[in-house]
Image (cartoon, rainbow, N blue to C red):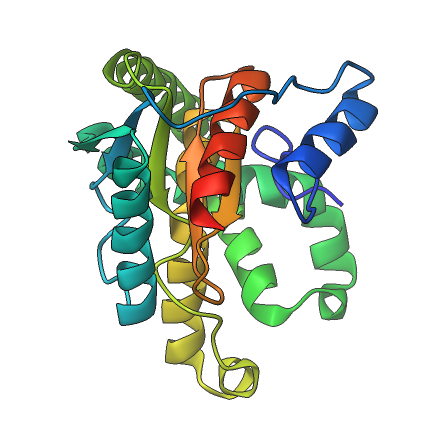
Length: 238
């Protein structure tokens, strides 16, 4: 079911990195990544600081610090990374995501608006007011920001960040409290948008703290290399 086809990605959800590698191979018709001998020793990892740690809650923050410490203790070099291009790119989803989503869903939204959850419907409708000039300009700028990002992280095997800065929100309250919905929804989706906007493959691993994940981002079309890094990290974080 498409949301924004230029950003949507398909990937497996499984109990292990190995299983993810096997399912991904089945999906794309290729060979599964060779994960034999994967180790964190000698890896150079970037711990992203920009935006992704803002307003982080206590449990995800503790899980993040613990995961980074365990990777260091296992022999990885972990370097703090500031990337101003991420802070500039994230708000651009307001133009890029909504315009594309409305372009895909406009007929349904306007013909049968009751079929879509109201907050999502109104967010998509915001794309109705995005001009073609704004959309093209945003894409041109995003491509430049992606180039800056790729140059900045070229010396790293993967970029690390908390998968989400919050815990799963209270479902009943989401339906009753509009301000709570907006706050928690934006936090829940924020960090994973980094990979979407920068055009990156990503893997999220459990840290051992319930509902607190660690995301690893690789290079475009670098799924096999990323899966090897993730398999190595998985052995440390279990």
